[in-house]
Each structure stands twice: as structure tokens, then as C-alpha cells.
Length: 223
Ligand code: SAH
Ligand code: DHB
Ligand code: MG
Image: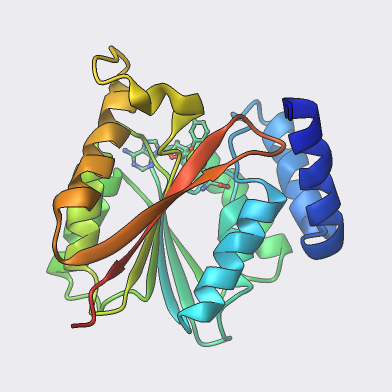
């Protein structure tokens, strides 16, 4: 198997199960036009987030790292009309592009874009007494991933699902001496998942249209 096969199979799956409508396609185009990084989740990963959101009956979703709103749109489409996605973005340009895309998708009423650093907004949400989220998707900067996860737990209840993107990094996570802060950050998260008795977790390796990577999925224990 090689990368070309992974891409062809990814397109085969998305053609069947995750076709992008015009809004999703234009969201990707808007990133290119604005010179933003092409690091949105893939269509199949967006569909994966949607399936998980529906499996946990999610009404309230928290996302760290909005970029152009591509994953946000997939998530917001999986919740009922009175549900809410709170999505956190540090870069005001990214947030502005995302807002346009989310408006175009007709999802403005379901999505609350919060501009600021993920750690600050997590603290603000806690202080404001925000009710627990049903699903949390962590996809912002990688070095503080473990800290984001621990803060996310404070905004969770028994049964809350937490998904973390980019925890394999083309296998670079195997290198315990990696000088890359992003790799060290996701390694700390993965270690935390193995040690924290409050959660039951696994990691899915993922191949496809983007580089080889993976997502961690954890559920806050019910008993
Ligand atoms: N979830 C998006 C991709 C997110 S890319 C999707 O799949 O469509 C990561 C985003 O996190 C970038 O837009 C980046 O600006 C933002 N980011 C980086 N550091 C951050 C921080 N400390 N707090 C909040 N957002 C941050
Ligand atoms: C990067 C970040 C991501 O969230 C991602 O999915 C892929 C790459 C990055 O910063 O390189
Ligand atoms: Mg990512």
C-alpha cells in the first residue's frame, strides 16, 4: 500500500459517504484565497466527527481551533437546531473567514465563535459556569494539548467524548527524544490518556488525502 492508494480509497469513501456540498467546497477555497494553512480535517474525518456527535446525542459541542470553519460545519450539522457549537480561534483573520463560511452554511444560530487563546477561553467558560459539553474536539496548537485536555475535563460530565486531532504525526510520536514541541505535546497527551483513570481512550491511526496521522478518542467514565 502506498500514499496514492490511501488517497484513492479516501476519495472512494468520501464519494460514497462524505460528499462535500458547495458550502464545504467553498470553505476550502476560501482558505486558499486567504493564504491560510490547508490543515482542515478531510471530508471523511468531518463525517467521522459527525457520526460520533450523533452517537453521543450531542447538543453542546466545544471545538478548539476553528481555522476556516470546515470541521465546525460538519459538527454543527450533526446537532439539533437548538444545539450549540462553541468554537475557539486565536487568529482574528481565521475567525473572520470562518464566520463567513458558517453564515453561508446557514449555521450562524448554532455556532458561537470565540476569539482568543484556547486556554483563556477554557478558563472563561469554566468561570462563567458553562454547562458540560457532550463532545469536545481539540485541534488547536499542539504543544499544550495535555493541558487543554485536562481543562476540557473540567467542562465535561460522565459520558462526554473528547477527540484530539493529530496525535500520530506521521509516526513521529514514536520518537521519545523528538526536539519538535508539537510532537512532544501530543506525546504528553497520549501518555496522559494512558494514565488518567477518569477516561477510557484509544487512538485511531488515519491515512487518506492528508499526511498519515491519527485521532485520540476518549470518553469520561460512566462508572
Ligand atoms: N479544526 C479546523 C482546523 C484547525 S487548525 C478544521 O479541521 O477545519 C488549528 C487552528 O488553531 C488555527 O486556525 C490556529 O490559528 C488556531 N490556534 C492556534 N493556536 C491557538 C490557540 N492558542 N488558541 C486558539 N486557537 C489557536
Ligand atoms: C497541523 C495542524 C493540524 O491541526 C493538522 O490537522 C495538520 C497539521 C500543523 O500545524 O502542521
Ligand atoms: Mg488538526
